Length: 424
Image (cartoon, rainbow, N blue to C red; front, side):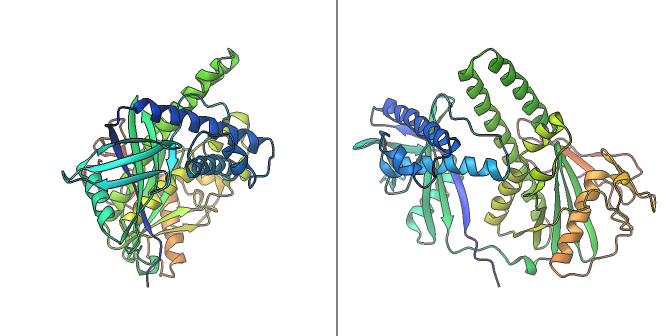
């Protein structure tokens, strides 16, 4: 038995425009920004979301299906805010260009040339096209060429955008035949505890804890606070255009780091036999947080769900299933004796008030998440007589990973093996 979840991957390419009208594509991305802003403004005013697409399309100078895709993305951002508040309330005064979303064979087309290149044609404006060939990594080009010739693959929505003044095309492709292994056919559960400045992982099999790892990424919290401070200053100075630019930079920075961390999680999980990655279900977390104005702002804007989503779809592309458990008491429960109370945890240090077990608090939470995952899969929970010493790696801006370091020796269990963390 297998899940029927399709495998989706986003392929990134540079556009080598050969039709001598690159300015046309840039003008279209400015028009897409106007569509996004108008959609967001109408949604904030309470206009019926079903009426917004036609209302915006009447005034947009874009291909109709492209306008509809941009509107859908703007409404998706609004919906994401109301449900999760991942990045704050979307702005309706964004400046600069905005990704031009298009459906395959409607807003854009791809084809193989006699020279083995992939040619593109993008409908930037009604009856006006931008043409050229795609440039990018061999891996992404190989996947796209297979998708163009193989019925098992489907080419979907793409986004044309400008990044550092360079034209790019991001294409979604789906493998319609390959499916994700049924989670009940797993042999290892990987518990993932997502926090403000790290993610803790524990791999648990029927033999006990196989390994644990804590991946630090303090730069996300630091950069979010830095951008928040800068935005407040420029907002107070009345420079709204700079405010929107800073907001866009922050989103791109956070998204880049989350992709790196999510790849690390999946690569680490792949080493175990038939893994299933388990997350806490944090949908209701936003409504339950109330720790004062400053802490609420920090926690409400942390992209917990975004990291879980990126990890989940990357895992799916590797055939690894994911599952979700109730987060209740995962940070307060002792993984050794089961005693749970708030006083067990003091920031990053955990000391059980009942049995005296000491641990890295986030690693302990990941163990509890893995245990709940095991129960959800109807396994027998193995005895946890000892836990491996915590190993830590840190994500770097370049994508490299430092060598692991070992925490204080109060974490009981085996010695660290000196294994270097997974890099991109």
